[in-house]
Length: 576
Image (cartoon, rainbow, N blue to C red):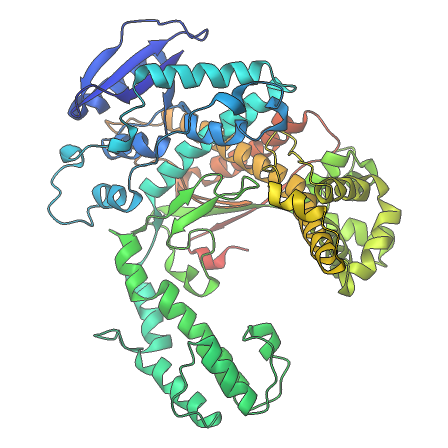
């Protein structure tokens, strides 16, 4: 059963309608006051367990979470639309020609301030409309029409089962993202401030640099004989380096390390501390940490391959130097799990390369280090060489160690290497490629095709370069995108099992999830669960079971597993 949500004819009302799986109305639409929406949703959730259909989960779910209401499943029309409009699986349908773009989401900064109390003067979450006025045209009829169009597109696609799984996993991801933002990563502000004070000095009272950073800047000016040097300006720094005889082509750390000069060591230290100050300094604490929680903003499918991104706060790249501030609450632990060699295993599954699959495990289900297995078979046991070769094959390396080692890998695993090579050639021809479940690359532009028909030698060189660049993109897209699908299925399955565990636990009086394990962070192939210490063993088992379930959901029963490494720690910095 579906439950459709849309804005009502008055700004203070919401329309809710139950529909059967075939799209027919199950009951007349209800007009609900915004202030009563959470009560209505909770009642319908308990009675029917429907799949909630809304324009965007981010427009609706945060306010429900703040009111203590969680839902089991949803259909996020915007996320599904983004997939269907480009999917080759649905290319023969009329969906991509007739869909109506959905309205934008609610202002995320304003939404966060309502949820976490960082905006003064907000007494109640429902004092302000929960949905942007831009959603006005999307009344209940429009939501129903879009849902019907998407269901028809999937049903008439070339792979309806795969597309159904993809849309379900993507929509589940929207719920996970909102719940993780609401829960937040446990964060000890006192430890973070102590780290900043130790590395940077006291918090500056104005916009100036902290004292230790400024002292390093003074050392750089002296060492480079550049009294007016602004070390934060790449152009200014490059000029000063060249005047000092350091002919660096960029200010990247790895390149600067190649030069022997007294200024290099303090310059690298300055850059590291400057990054800490600007990215995760005192301003970051004030903006992103509230009541002992880092409330990250995730963007589901924010990358064209389907990988997640973050809107702010750096949730997808928490630096190692501040992870010591992520500490479990008393009586809790952090369960940090990452999928081992996810993309190479995805490649073996996509290519159905049994030889590569065997390098990562045996028929009895005993998992092995895939890189070590490949190294033992063809690289003299050198794991690092095997890793460089395999990642080079996935990312299209043609030079350096990767380019030198890839031919050996091709001789060992021709099916896997041919799979990514065919994806690259398709990209060079301007064709689209797709992930296993049906996310496809956007079509090439007319300008790209016009460029490929250029006649002059210079234009042809540019066209060849553009073709090779697209080939590298499509080569990686099929692997990275399918890995993102696996990770989303893992998240969805883990969330489902944690919900079942919470339902069997003593009730807390609402649906907030207090006192039960909660997903609090996700990074491509890594998840973090904040877990009561008494439930660690049970939740660890659930993490492993969810990874096996995700593999079978996507690929069926195959002779290859996707194992996860699990660390149970009090502090994120201690996770291996």
